[in-house]
Amino acid sequence: MTPNEQGTTQREERLKRILAHDNAILSLSNTWYCVACLAGFVAQIIVLGIHFSFGFVFVALLDDFDVSKAKAGKFVLMND
Image (cartoon, rainbow, N blue to C red):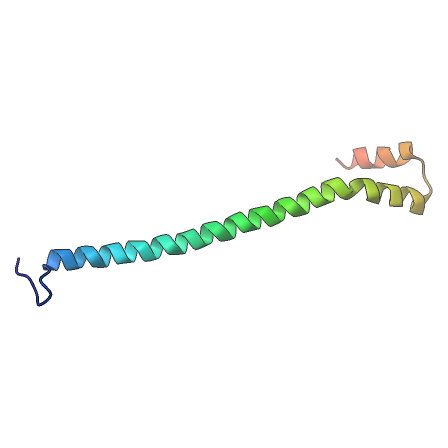
């Protein structure tokens, strides 16, 4: 193989192009990994927020519908 003006061969040029392309794909996939991780974090926050705030909602339902805890508990258990 003959070197070009810069002193590199065609094989080295091709290898540089391949590596540059791989780095571009890697940076793009890293971006999507971050997006997926952030989406999972947001979903976890929403689920835990609903889970831990159910006690407050339960008390409000008891007051609004004027039922006992036993009757309201039956309703909650029937929907699981």
